[in-house]
Length: 245
Image (cartoon, rainbow, N blue to C red; front, side, top):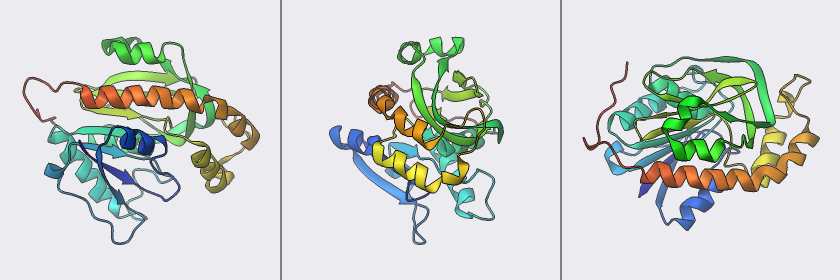
């Protein structure tokens, strides 16, 4: 498959997804918005889109003018029936593209915390089975999204009631970072050092590093998600368009 990814800052890259894409022999391309000469492909040229994280929020268009273009591109991909997967900021951008609100969370969530499947997640039984043991995953975010209309609310955590959603077999969004690697984690700690304070859902750098024991399980979960997301059969009406508000 032809898979394109959107990267917002140099230090939040594909992580383990790069390994997964290589193992599965996908045709991969990317847009780096931090590159002044960045370009987006034609929607018709790709089969799937992966949207990565970043420290900005979805409304900072004055500081990051490319955000408006990116949102439009995501909308076009969703409308065209492409597979779309978002992580953290990427998930929030998908929510925005689908007409849902994104706002500052009650508490920052930084470090290793459990996520819990909702009752609604049993509509996608493989996903529910994947998360029913409430795995510990890596978080680094300040904002939250509302679940878009017609999407299924899939996961929650004590700090954030909205951790993932799924729509129309093609669109999946998660608030946390299953793609995390040892190198990625160190980059978060370097570039996000000022985010580490004494709030309840913010771990210390030492606690974050101790949580590296969970990385392998995160990769196992992510591999299943990516496999099932790409392999899910489309609706009988091929490339059925999603109506966006």
